[in-house]
Image 1 (tube, rainbow, N blue to C red):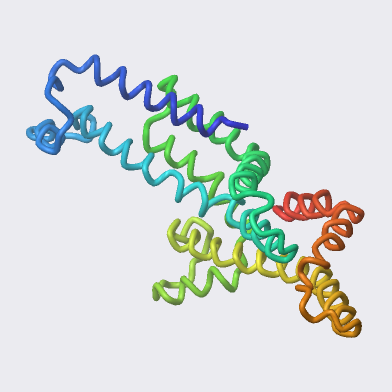
Image 2: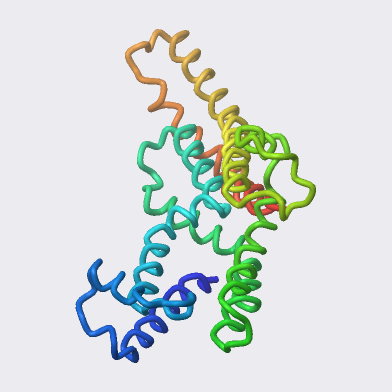
Length: 253
């Protein structure tokens, strides 16, 4: 489940070992040393190890944003936010708990894809069975397939029209950036739909409690204080966490 973290760690270890084995890179890691190794390079294989490390660190700095926007994490965390607001429990569960639960569910949902990337891209690359370009293609391929299964054609067509592209004939003709934008829009739309459904029963409880308090003349008592226990007990008796997580996990085709 944590193959993605293992892959990143192994990449860093491999890069550091390669850097130690490169005698020409003895200076500090600075911009001047990054471009110094590029002088006289006649092919991509001649680029210095320092530049490779620089590119690797740049990619790793963008990894959290890439992870959030290209996986199931976005839909899950938005739905959890709607649930907490609908129940009016303030900071319960805390942000750390919701993010941790969303991360665990994301790794569970994405584990078949990460396993495919590990088997088809990472292992063959470290065993020198495939080149870098093929490893990148094998890494992006399963992620693109996942996003294509979730994206709505209307959302994807929107960004294709914005980019003034010709109509793609196959999936391979759709750029990764265009697919990612359509995927994000689709995920937010689905999350808001689920959030609306979550809000309905809690809103009914708020309306009933508010009407009851007004009929009793207890206008100074905030309805949220009275409705909160009823919301919690209803959510528990309905086995809400089971139903919500079941919907979230099975909702990814």
